[in-house]
Image (cartoon, rainbow, N blue to C red):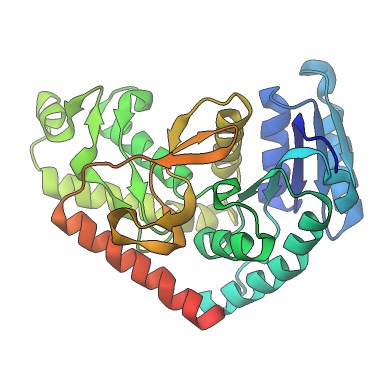
Length: 315
């Protein structure tokens, strides 16, 4: 059994998201070794070369294309491999195709590495996190998805713009499915400890319901808008991957809304969706109960039901 190298990351899948994540992780200086794996070996080699040529401007690092045997000592395995949605294809068809891809990819990972953390980024992330947990047999704390980390960042960004304050001072979460049934948890939102509505009024905004509705819709539709304008989204998610890896590698115990198998919190059990979790070197280290209104709890339950129906259709 290989000894895990805390400074090594593997990326499985070198499409837009995988290669942007590789670049973001190189820039971060978190790792000293990175292996890129793709069904198209030449694509992985090209990305490794391209990123490597910038190393004189960054931190020393070994970046190379490899096979599954090369991940045996990787501390974090980022899985972005998956198919994109074809025109006219339903979401369920896409789910089935990507679960099929995972049935090939996850056993190959497990053959060589049983002690690393599986970070699932491919979409639909909640269903694929569930699939990865079942297919890998890993302890559930070491299999989780990027979830609504990016959606939450979009919410903070838009609230920061709306209120004209630094988005890093905004504390709010998107929870539930990373998808159309996601929920903005307004009840627990605040700006540096000041309840959101009070802060809005301090900044001259009084139509709370209307603004909340518009901002939540904009968050939900962000990806669609970007895809319509440029064909794919990859920089935002790459920065989210970097942020999650930072919490793991530095054992930060950061609270991030990652997608993980639920253990009965909020009455939801046995499927993966996003709730605020403590993330550190052992992966997901515990849930953080946040204030939710009755309506938000109901919406969360509906989001879970949506995911459960897909799981029932696919598994």
